[in-house]
Length: 348
Image (tube, rainbow, N blue to C red):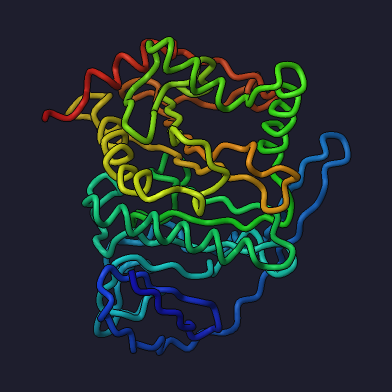
């Protein structure tokens, strides 16, 4: 992998990740852009203790542009985008409309491929491995920055999720705080260790593998399963078999196998509602140990993948119980979801 760092016309950082070591990047951004002005701030909810990002400047972000005006495609004559080059493998740049900025963190966009009409599931294993390398490198870089407490790599896919750009891409948030969801995991982890002397993540994975009913894929280095108390209609958690705190700690065998396992899970997601169904909307989220956690080795890196579609043509909305009280009601039993995800396995 070759990494090349440059700047866009307004000063934002742009990083190319190329599979070939002899790739040369010389294109510059010719657009007459003003410096990015953000009004992002983080406020604490006094009742819940949650952090809320207030980012009014995002009201003006690009919203469902036509394909020939996509800002994530390579630039071409007469049409300059966020990526000045006429081709790229993987590109990462600072978000022009960040939810977090300055002392309140950083937001980056990760373009997985120059192909506007593709999806992550369409990538080759080599392309997916390059994205994993980019996620890992960005995690390392952002974790070293002053004030960053947690690095979150994720992908939103589909208009049903709220995606405003159709080009296959993800994002990375560098939070200046530990997120509420991770705080709850850490509390459960500590309580389990106090009560049993064991690691909660290890016990969860061991229980799922021993039970087997909810296991979707069990590789040499990764295991994918529908969790026992899944919140979403179709939800898969993907863990490395050897517990590590973050992407940087993955060993080479796990890094090599990841594209095979992850691409297969994504392709099954696109088949669960039948061949005539549109692409399955989903959120794919990496959970990594907070940068300054007291004992990072106890945390288990894992990826959570889920869809808001509960059946063909019907979505799972977060209504009164979910939105008002954070109590989820799942219409699809996890065992049934796992059965379906096994049924739609790729043909060997």
